[in-house]
Every structure is written in structure tokens, then in C-alpha cells.
Image (cartoon, rainbow, N blue to C red; front, side, top):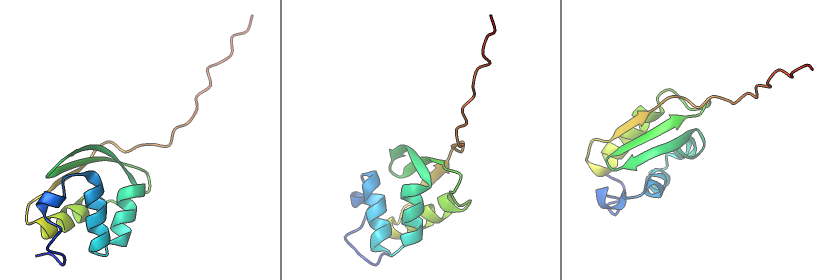
Length: 97
């Protein structure tokens, strides 16, 4: 079930608990993606919704969901919403008198 019996569903009450779980399970790359490649939209266990950044791996939600399920024994719904695009400034055309 889990390498650390203290990490259970009760401990996954806050978003930072997810990062701590990934650290405890030695999922460094997945933890890095969690913190740097996605923006949290909603966290209501067992459901998490993110908006991916351009560098987010395609299988991020699937991998995170699998790790959470293995650690907690519950199915987690990890959703990825509309990607966050790099913003480009649009300059309004200047008016000529």
C-alpha cells in the first residue's frame, strides 16, 4: 500500500500534503512538475484541478492520480483545465490626429 503508513488520506487534507507525499515517495520529478508546471485551480480531496503551464508533461494528471491512489487507497480525480499560454502584449494602434 504505502511506504510510509503515516501518509494516509487523513494527511492529504491540504495541497502541501500532496507535495510532502511526493517527496516521501521519492517522486522528485513529479513533485517538481506539481510545483512548477501547473497552477492549482481547486483542491477538494479526493479531487484536484490544475491549469497546466506550457512545460507540463501530458501524463502529469495520470501519474499524480496513480501515486495518490497507491498512497491513500482511494481513487483521485486529477483534472487539467485549459492550458496557461504565454501572454503576449498587444499594443493598440496609435490614433493619428
